[in-house]
Length: 482
Image 1 (cartoon, rainbow, N blue to C red):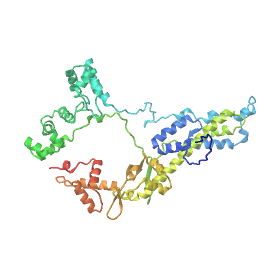
Image 2: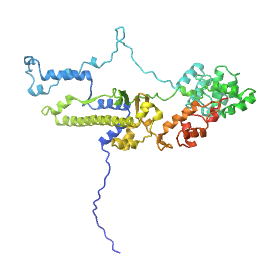
Image 3: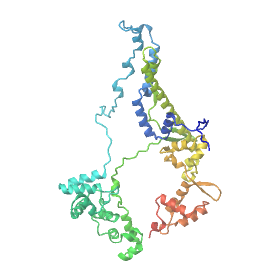
Image 4: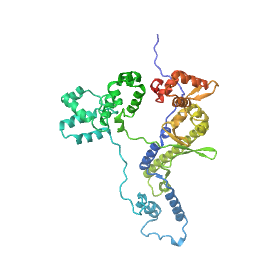
């Protein structure tokens, strides 16, 4: 068999999507919520000297100033040229004192009602962490170094609910202290605020809260202390028989228990509060709904006129400076165009949502229609991924409240009339049935299925159970009252 070595040239033409920097920036900004976009644009203002923020008042003053410069009232009032300056220097000179406003224009001073300026500093309040709150109480409660060392370790071993996650033996081994010393330190810790902190399970947490108010003789305390397992399983008749009382009194005692906090540590969270600012606003004007962006706090950008003049000044600017300014001008124009495309895209998507869900805005959640991202994408002539980015982590303020944009998209359930019904509408109906049921004889999941089928909604029992769990509604057994 003959072996040959050679080269072959093949022409292969393929299509592929190239993610240019401009496209990457556009997709990134499209997915940003308004608060995040606001921070990014402020950072861009610091990094790109060509960009400047538009202020309506200052902008109007500058335009008036430009008019005065271009058309002087009296030609005789033009300043005499300095004999010591060359013609080029006079041509390139920029009046920086006139361009930049007085520093006082940028200071923030708020005047009080009495006419005097406020001089105190405005600061944001900070959230208190659970560990900080407990350590401060520990240092007040004891000055013993060994107790402080063990107590700080125990505080560091608490979970988000305020429960101790380690056993006495594990703590003793870690801090190299006797188990009895660890137990006494934990007992001290369990007297701190919030009540119930430092417990090792839910039962101990509830008992600590009863002890904090010196309520250790009530029926509710006895239910938790002696019959906690039956209480969790909702066996009120068994508890009543053992305590020689009625099931109704046991249920009243569970109401007292329900007022206790099963997660005391959650009162002091380590997470910063999350603030929601609507990205879009839907208002009703006369007989129609109007959509606009909630971007009053987003900086309005423009290209600085000073740098534009610098680029047109061919004689007094060197090539290196021109190249730098040119790159910054291109980046600034690209950023401004990207923000404008983002604005148009978001409004277009929201208008489509309002058009499809007009009955919801008119009559409520019972009339929310099933809708998918693909449906909106086809309607506005965009890709589904673009609609997904627009609706991701964004909120809209409407006459019916503030909603996440994803709220308006839901799966459908078939009715006997052939019409698709939104799953959110079914959930709302399930909640209505539970709220209006007779508490002594609550609806079972199958009973809810039968009611919905009589109303024309075809749904399975497991679907009702899933919706009930998602809404945090207990099963009929646990909802029953005596």
